[in-house]
Image (cartoon, rainbow, N blue to C red; front, side, top):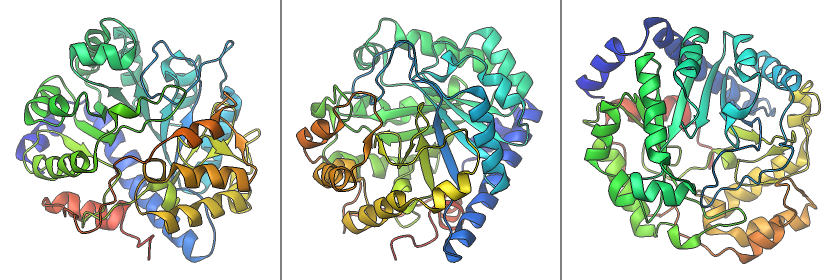
Length: 397
């Protein structure tokens, strides 16, 4: 971890917000992993983290997006959302990824966050709706980190996002976050049209200069009604991305995040190991956001522990996924997902009613599971964190 990063973290964010980030997300996040491991040893299951898609409403139409908008929009009710968070806290889970659609279109979202000052919320947003007032409100509440999605530079971003001047609007949102001294992140879905621009030292430094304190790289997955498989990375490009991430971590002036590799460079899948699950706007419990089938629903958000523990469907998915691959089953074996969905008679929770056909039409793509090509972490800090706090529990035996 670079000296430049430490200096930025100590001087740029509001001190109260930095404390919330360090304690609610950092310390409590580590504790949630420990409790997750202890539950597994007792034969119990409850995810350490939950990702919640609070609405399917959005102001953009991105390539490869799995979310189908509806009119009126589907959304989790504020009362149910409050119940889910309360139930998770009982199990020692205090961190939530908040997705959409565009979550800033969800009315009353900040009211729910404010009711849970002991939690931390990572807000996945395209950034176009982060006005000065929105950024000021996030600073006041204190337990929110906006994670602004950047899908390429100006020209590529507009194509990927299906809009005009999207990059400029996202940059304005990022500027408002910096103005109000938020702990801010940028995420990007790396694909063939943007890998040269985004997997570069220049992009990392530019994003840091704009106020981002962490950068999350994830791999584009061709899913949804308009999957655009031509944008999927080749296996060689995935390896190239991994090598770049490992090398840039040694000197980057921000934290570089991934959720694909452990400290030794072995491939992992959070859904496969069960460390996280996703809840749709309809309340369906899905393995992860782009795998949109389910058999369980949260109802009013109470009794979550029993729902997760009695779910044969989720247990069978974890077993099937781990036996199939250590990487991304969507990328490598969409046929297995299709067969599993049919065998289990799972509900198509996408709202489109076409998920089986989508899986049947998907082709295998390059993934991060490439035996013999593992690239271990070079940074001691990332190596230690991954080994002990995130991917260090030997989930694949």
